[in-house]
Length: 167
Image (cartoon, rainbow, N blue to C red; front, side, top):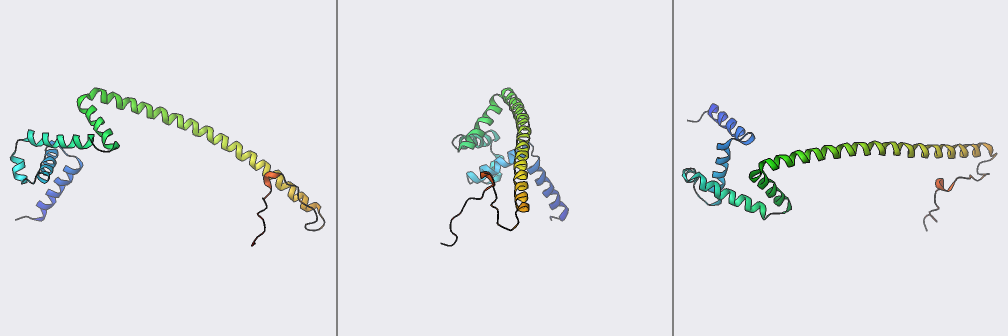
């Protein structure tokens, strides 16, 4: 009879196999794939020659990667390099890591430069806006009646005429 403790233990083993699989867990996945793919009872697959089962799996796996989309082809090349030339693969990872670090440093420097440029631009815009506001306030204060004196704003602060409204 199956009790709660056994079910819980089996669930824990299944979680372990999903999160941190060992060689047996991988082979069990391959057996389940073979069973589904070739409509073979799982017990028969487990009794079959493991070399045959794995060869068929890897034939299918690498062929589907090689003939797949662009992402699959890149994954195929990566796996091929990992298997056939493991030292070169490790070297390429180190080179990639170094390149990413260098790129991040350059981006940080550029970001700092952009912040400085932005600060200068904002400072200039603030200064111009402040001067224009001061002119407007002085102009309003010096006129005796509302609308009596036309404001003389520079072109960059004038609102363009949008035409007649509602026509």
